[in-house]
Image (cartoon, rainbow, N blue to C red; front, side, top):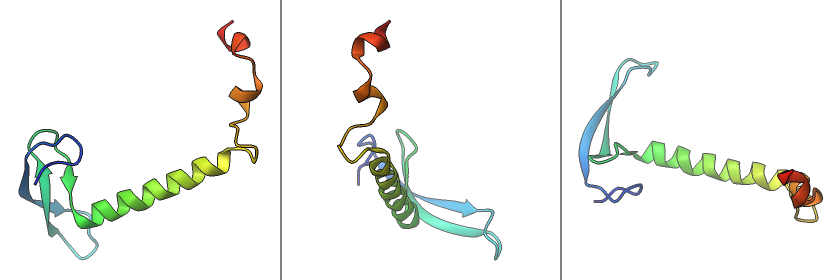
Length: 81
């Protein structure tokens, strides 16, 4: 298995969740030997849902005409001055 971030070698690792309300809990995950990226199913799910929420919030910022407001309405010469 290779890392989704850097294509490095992933190894099986066990992580300890110290803040679980039912007491310490060990999680089995894959960790990249190169960059330290952790791949675990709950983490992946949370990353996907946060990415979707970020995409929706950015979509809400754009105006109905499809512009981003400030940079489109201001002249480029005004920004450089």
